[in-house]
Image (tube, rainbow, N blue to C red; front, side):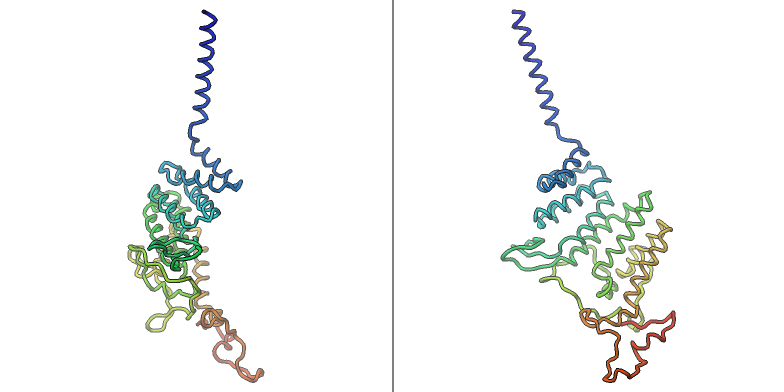
Length: 319
């Protein structure tokens, strides 16, 4: 009898031990463990399993604020490697909804919209991003994605302004400035004279996005170059160009050591607009050069583009 009781207790002990071990292994991994596992799966090419892990991290409101941006970036990479570009919007918007107060995540989501494929098709009234075989109406979301990115960045502004890490806040404003120039920086800089409506998303554009015709740098009603003045505030800006100048001013205010970087950024922009290089571009960006157009190559022409050598340091000739 004693031997039977002892054997029974031993079996019960083994059973309990087995249950405890099984329970330990069946517990969900911690956030760092899940991230590490997902990263390894991604590195090994197991994109579906990696995506499941990264998506879980993205949609969890308790995920570490400093890590969720990289989680979203990795999840998107997995989707694209799987050829599931059409799931991009749902993933980004679901992540934004879960972390609406995280300005760094909002900035990352905005950047992803600007970098995502902008071509797609309208299927049964729904836009499907990415390529597709057969059926559907070709659409592009270039302008729509730009506006959505700016909406997210505008949502992030008051959150970023409260952050004590001013160096990162300064970089945020630089990023916002670059986003405003998206598809506005050179060929269509004249669009910076308009104020993009950030209250509503624009409709999708027809067909495939192509190169736009370059008509030269914008001028005002009196024919004077448009330099875009700095407004009193983001809200007071009357054009996207003024929003751009405000963003650059805030980058310097939050980090004064970025003054020269901002100056270089502006100098590069204005050189593109008003530098003598602009004279070589014709319609749709075709270059027509600076060479002589007369029949006699020995003929000396001192007018127009051939007078570049006469320009002073404070003068330019621009298209």
